[in-house]
Image (cartoon, rainbow, N blue to C red):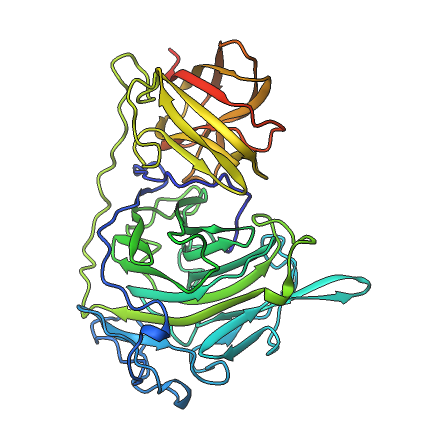
Length: 496
């Protein structure tokens, strides 16, 4: 949340990085742990919402054992194996400032966002058992002006390690960007962002509320691990959903509605030109919670005439932080795994589409739709056929990818494939770095497809730091055509 670029959105992020690269992740695991209820309607009678952390938590702040009077009428559910460190069920009539602080900022504070974060109860208020962060559109000096709400627990409820659960309902609307995220209390301990680390528990873009994002930021150069989850029942704005993180020494796991979305256990931090800090830095220090509703900016884009600010409300049902009685901090970075080339030197598996694999999982090929893209993909007759009914608003709105392309600095690579379309059109091909701030190893390259099958060859030099989690992409959105595309004989190989 702190600093994002427009990114190529993906769901295939099952990636492992070496010491010389930028982290690993495995997504879409289904062994979800027990989670708290996702709305207060499912909670039982009321009681205190906080308890002290175990004394062995040297890095954790000491939580109050008693809630304020405003929060004594809801019981924070207990979880097996955990103690309640602190929570807020938002059942009073105002923000509990023993837990939260307002975090005002001028427009453009970060990410070129448009909103001013204020301390006004028009933007931050508690109502009907929910914290509401509301974005407002007004006029200032004859121009559109936006205000919104942001709160944080810094200096009040800081903690190291635990299970964090947030029950929330997000708003719909172009340019709206709700988030629940964590930053270190002392951003200077390992260096300023991104070296200090950041944990994004949840982000949703108001123009596509079918998709939620879970992200980890760290390192220099800036690296990130990210996974996405589609809403099981349509979208994340149609009701309250639970977003949670289990943060332990050496591993962080993200869940949405109890389903595991992302696991990260390989990261680093360093100042440019210096040695890396001992693992598991930077995620071995106190962090604090933040909740905000941004308006506009580099990632979501700005509001337009379709954005209805009457309903621009980010509602938070609860925030609950649990801790285990103790944590084993004697952890080591996992041994990196690197994808091996096939016998013929090809790093692309099933490049000839001989196997009719599952195109929705994170193994080999994956077909994805984002930002208004509509269509389907099918493997048949040793090729993949991509049919689009709506090209969407982004180049990646209709996308075919294969992850885990090992990129080695100083090597030369070649991408080749055969393709044609049922009417002349273009698509873009790239080799990207999902874990390294989405840099391009092979720049987004438009290729002109005709109705006759042709072989396309794209060469590039790898000039960046080693990265075993590069990704081959075919982007077919926002190109002025929905003509069906046929692709086969895909290769990515080293050029000797």
